[in-house]
Image (cartoon, rainbow, N blue to C red; front, side):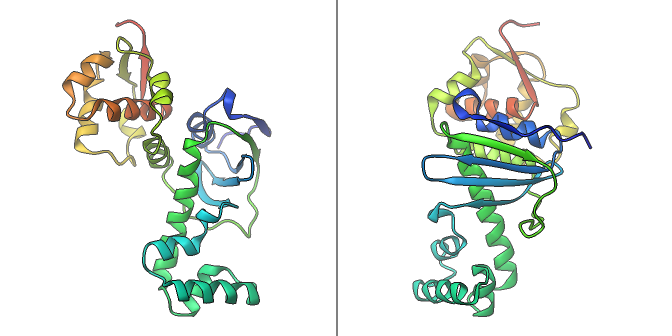
Amino acid sequence: MSTPSPTREGVLSTTTFPGLIYSILSRKETGVLTLTGDTIEKSVFIQAGRPVFATSNDRDDRLGQIFFKAGLVSLEGLVHAVERAAQETKRLGTVFVEMGLIQPHDLVEGVRNQVRNIVCSLFVWTRGRYRYRPGPLPSDEVITLKLSPGNTVLEGIRRIESWERIWEAVGGLDVRYQTVPGLEGMSRDLTLSLEEWTLLSYCERPAPLRDLCRSSTLKDFEICRLLWALMTLGMVVRSSTGT
């Protein structure tokens, strides 16, 4: 395992969240990455290069709302569980299980979805401050979920709808893309559709963006967004001219 980097701080206007988090994940570091907006603060807990937990003060990220929106918990059940959790100083998920509103396996999957949603929601942030503090994680926060780094980045970038950001990342119609050596090992735990794997195969030799758009059955918007994700993951590189 590589030596943890020193504490880093900055603003998102000078870097992108996809590049920031993958620079930490790819070095298999352990630490806490915190982003702060005007009123919202979210933290991603990373262990040996894998997101294992996340926290947020955004009310929409609360675990109870995930179960409620999924229809697993009724409104009445949610209200009673929140009151009981506050009175007994217990985690809301634990109270849900104790009240028989959900099963233990539902809780594990719910927490996994909560963490994934918090992490992926940060990919759309373009403003705010970040602070990465390397080092051992607080033992009371770690719920060893070990989400896939590659799929986390892929899902996060898939949530980005801003064409301006995507176009800036891909560069232009004449920019050529090519896969890197060792691709098989890098893509082992990556979940891609057949069309996405086919697009990746087109990049075995340098291929201009315009040709990729003409050849693939994917929508051009999806192609550009996928290429951004693959570049972030270090699976493809781009150049202005062919080789």
